[in-house]
Amino acid sequence: MKECKHLAIIMDGNGRWAKAQGKPRTAGHLVGADNVRTIAIAANDLGVKYLTLYAFSTENWKRSREEVSYIMKLPAYFFKKYMQEFIDRGFQMHMIGELDELPADTERVLKEAVEESKKNTGLSLNICMNYGSQREITLAARHYAKDVLEGKADLNIDEAGFEKYLMTKDFPPVDLLIRTSGEERISNYLLWQIAYAELEFVPESWPEFTPEVLKRCLEEYSHRDRRFGGVHE
Ligand code: FPP
Image 1 (cartoon, helix red, strand yellow):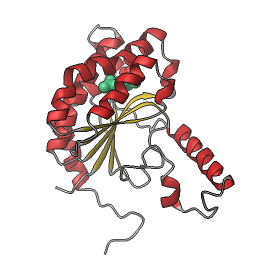
Image 2 (cartoon, rainbow, N blue to C red):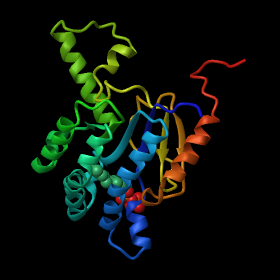
Image 3 (cartoon, protein in one colour):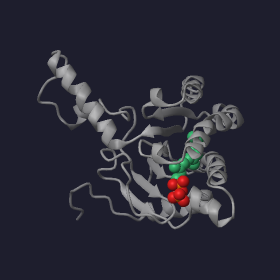
Image 4 (cartoon, helix red, strand yellow):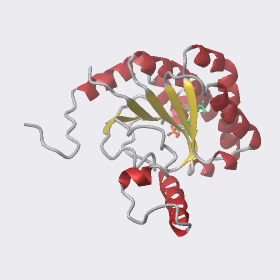
């Protein structure tokens, strides 16, 4: 199967899934959090090296106070339950987003997960928290402009040079982006990094996104003809 080194997922549909079961939206987020572990293990088994998940966007603050506060407590639940297993499996945790704007406890838990797993060399599990791609690019532009003003960067920077200012500077470009739950939008996610990614939109909600569905997606990906703007004979 063609290698998918970097897989990104927009984990959509937790709320609708819960509602369909007569449960509160937060019940969907809880099952969704447990599914992060299931899919991280499955992705690793299927050869993925970088798995980047959209957990909370810069726009998600518009949700009710109850829902936001529930999502902010999920990392503590999640890492308490699974961190030891992730360490044993060699996973390294990375966070993408403006963590300093999160509740202090959430920020601490996320940073601890990164610290505890930093010696690992296996799957890079990247959680996007308080992340928005336009914000990321704006912050990168600001930082770059400052470096130019201070004589630390050349005005004639190229794409590879600019990428070093992005929050994803340590990761390769995204090969495949999957969005669950039927919506066909990118929602301000990794706009720079998906320049040549393959896109797949699946009907299953995130809680219904099983390892079998992931395998189906990777099989579909392996049949795509990636030309990166060139021509294949
Ligand atoms: C989208 O579904 C989901 C979210 C905004 C939250 C996703 C968060 C998790 C899956 C848990 C994160 C886990 C960790 C470890 C931090 P939605 O609520 O937009 O669903 P809807 O479209 O049906 O309303």
